[in-house]
Length: 325
Image 1: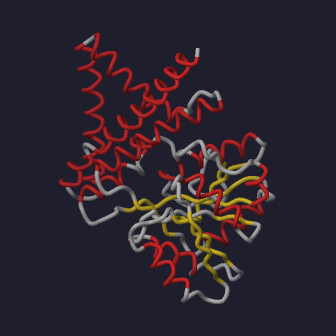
Image 2 (image 1 turned 90 degrees about the vertical axis):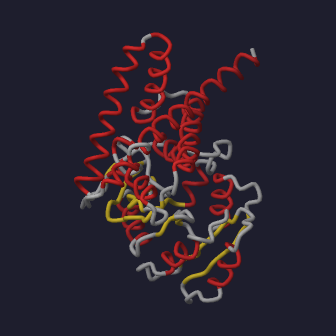
Image 3 (image 1 turned 135 degrees about the vertical axis):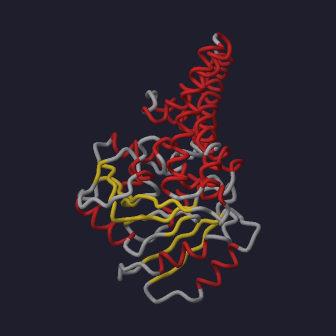
C-alpha cells in the first residue's frame, strides 16, 4: 500500500536476479492512493522475456490476506516472498532454491537483513542501527548477524522466506486473523510439522527501517501486540527475546508503585547501559556524537512500545475471557 517510493527498486531487484529461468512477479496492491499502481504498470511494459508481472488487489489491505492472494495466484511451484520496502540481492532466488534443495524442500528458507536508513537524517540512521543491534532486537539472528556462513543456520524464523506452494497449501496458508506476526506464525507451523526453517547468510536483503520515532513506536507496538496474540493462539510461552520487553515494562510499573529506590536503581542501570551502547555505536564506531545522541531514545522506544503492546494484548485477552465467562 502506497509504496511508490520503494516499489520500483524492489521490482528491479527481482528482474535482475542471476536465476536465468522464468520468474513471475506477483504483486498484491492494497488499493494504493499514490502512484504505486501506475509505476508498476510502466515497469510491466519493459519486462524481459523471462520475467512477468501479475498485479492483483487486496482491498482489505491486511498483510496475511495479501500474501494468501499472492500465493493462491502464483503460477509456479516455488514461492519467494519479498516486501515492497525491501530490495533483493541478485542471488536471492538462486540461493533460496539451493537452500530448499538442501533441506529436500521440507521447510522454508530466508536470508539476513542489511538494515538501511530510510532517508539521510541522523535519526533515521540511528533507528537503522537500533533495529539491528542485540540491545534493540535481542537474538534475532537475521537482523544481527554480520558475517557470512558457509552452512545453513537453523533458526526460529526468517524474513519473508521461500517455500513450496504445496507447503503453503498444507498449512492452510497464512493465518488471516493475525494482522501482524503472520510470518512468525507461518514459520512456527512449519517447524511443528517437523520441517526446518533455515537462514542462508549468503542472501543479504536490503531492508529500510522506519524514518522517525513515531513510526518506530507504532511498528513495534504492533509487533508486541500481535506477537502475544500468536502465543495465545498456540498456548505457548513467548520466547526469551519476546518476553523480556513486557517483563521489563511490568517491572518498571511495579517498582513505580512500590519502591522509588528500586525504580531509581533499575533506571540507572538501564539508561547507563543505553548510554554506553549509544556512545560505542555512535562515537567510537561511527565517529559521530550527534548519532550517539539520536540513538539514546531509540532503544527505549523499541523496548517500551513492544512491551506495552504485549501487555495490552494480554489485558485485552483477559477482558474478553471475563466477559465471555
